[in-house]
Length: 221
Image 1 (cartoon, one colour):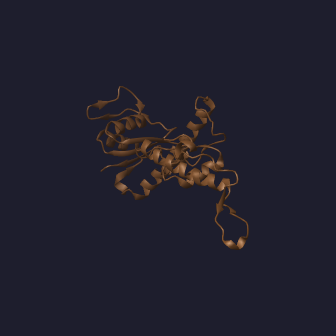
Image 2 (cartoon, helix red, strand yellow):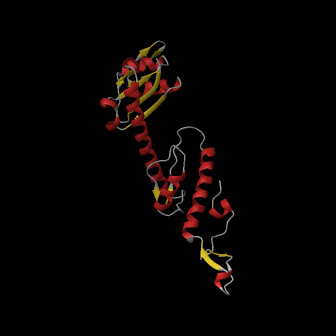
Image 3 (tube, one colour):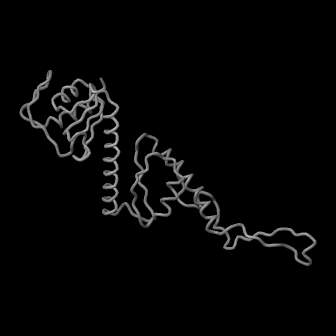
């Protein structure tokens, strides 16, 4: 992707007064030309900047071609708004790193803030996904019972598993050839088995879990 406006458009900054000249008729006497303006330098710069952002947006689509990858913007508010108006990338994070466009990701504080924003955005998106899944799924394809979820996870039936990040269910479990050596966290075990069978597992804050459950599973069948 181009990193500067000049590199992208191969244009120099517009003239300060942006004057042009026009041929005139005989009725103006001895005058040879009429000067007129073509717009302010600021307007032209905004137009060039919009073209630059379109080039950047195309590059973003090529770079982040896998679905669902979040894009965190950084910069001053005016330019962030301008880029959002141009971009067609579907996963721009709502919150941004505001301030100087020269933010350094070598700075620990910047990295920490960026990670916090991304984590909060992930929680928001997964909470919305969970809400929609609960509304759309057939009653027989969802469960909040830890033992039922774990059995389904061992059978490869769990498509998506949502866990309360602060919940645990300590118990002994036996299923087929698997038997606990002692008591263990069954929710953690369910997450492992879900992932091993190609499902997805997510941790969410307690306040966004469906019906206050410690676990919520959406089954494949």
